[in-house]
Image (cartoon, rainbow, N blue to C red; front, top):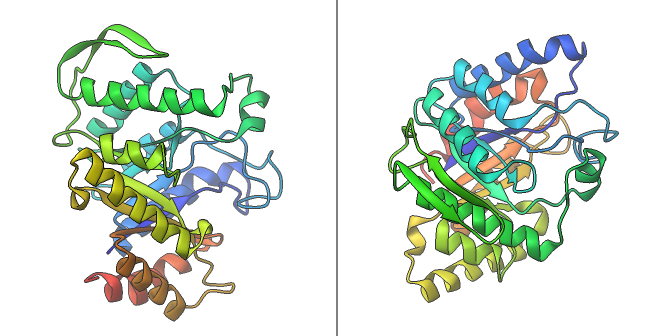
Length: 294
C-alpha cells in the first residue's frame, strides 16, 4: 500500500512569510518519511468548515506550488487532487502538466475532475457551466491528453475546445505519459471515464465505506463493458487523519487495511496539524512500515 500526503491548507502560525519554509519542511520530511506522493487542491477559495474557518483563508495556486515541490524533492510523485476543468484552457493545462513532469524528473500525475465549487468560480469571474457541460469538458480534456501524449503535434477538435496545432515538445518524461487520475464516484459518467481514459481513480472516504465499495464495483462493470483490464487502474483513496485529535495509530492502520481489502493500493491523507511535523514522523515510524506490504 502506497501512502500519499495531501496539503490542502496554508494557514500556519507566523502567517504568509512562513508558508515557503514551512512547505519546504513538510514536503522534504514527508519524502524522507516514505510518503509515495504529494498533492495539493485546485482551489482559490479555501473550503470553509473543512480546511479553514473562512473562504478567505490562505490558498495557493496548485501548479505553481507543485513546481516548488518538484525542486525540493527527488522521489515523491506530484499531483493536483484534482484539477478543475473550468480553470485552465485544456491545451495550456497539458503544457503545464508536461512542464511539471519534466522538471520533476517524470513524477507528475494529471489529476482531473469536473469541478464543483460554484461560489469560488463566480467570485473569480470564471464561467461555471452546467453539470452536464462540465462533464463534457472533462471528456474533451481526457481525449486531448490521450491524443497529445501519443504524438509530437496534433490537431484537436473536441465538443468545447479546439487546438489546430498543439505541440508536445518537450515530451513528458513519464512513460508512456503522466498518469491520468480522475476524481469522483459518479456511477454513469465519472467511473465510465476512468475505465475509458484513466490510469487511476480517486475516491474520497467521506462517501462512506459502503459507497466506496459500490464505486469500485461500478468501475469493474464499466471495465467489463469497455474491455478494459480493471487491474491496470490504480485505485486511490482520500481521507483525513488527525493524530493529535481523535485518530490513533492503530485506528489509522486498521483503516488502511480495510482500504486494502476493498482493492485500494494508494491511500492519500491530509492532516490538520501537519505543519507541526510530528504526524509525519509518526507515519514514518509507526504506520508506513506496517502497511507497506499490504
